[in-house]
Image (cartoon, rainbow, N blue to C red; front, side, top):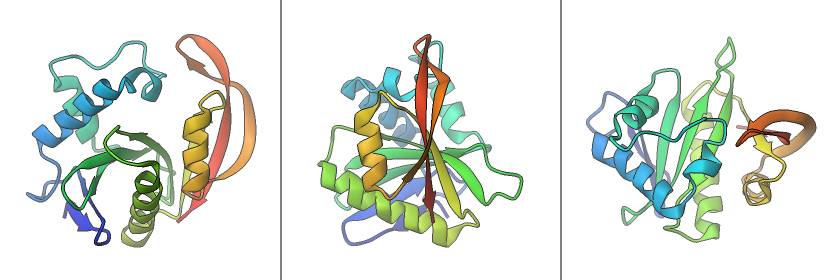
Length: 176
C-alpha cells in the first residue's frame, strides 16, 4: 500500500511498489514546490549542493529504500508537506524524522495533518519514536515541531554544519 486517508481533511501517499503510492511526477512536483517556496537550501542544509535540475537524483533520493518518504495532502489533492524518516535504529523502533512544508496551506493544516500523519505512522509500523535534530537557528521549524508534539530533550552544541557554519541543534523526540 502507498496511500492512506488520514481523515476527511487529509490523506498521505508514500513511496512504495503499489500503484497507489507516489509516482515520479508527484515526487518531482514536491521538489518544484520546495524550490518555489525557496526552502531547498534550508531543508537540505547538510548537503553541499542542491539536487540536480534533472530530478534524477531527487527521484533516487526519495525512492531510496533506506528511508520512508511521504507527502501529506489536503483532501482536495493539494500537497501540503513532505516527511521522511531515515537512520532507523537496529530494531526499527526509532528513526530520525525530517519535514518540509510547502507554501500551499495554512499553518493549522500543517499541524493538524502532521499530527495525523505521525499517528498513522505509529499505528501502521513498528516505529515507536521519531527523533529530530533541528538547528537552533531554525525557530520556525522548532515551533512546528513543538506543535506536532515533539519534546525538546537536549541542546547539542555545534553539532551540525549549516551552510558551512557550525550550529547548535535541538534534539527532539516524539512518541508515536
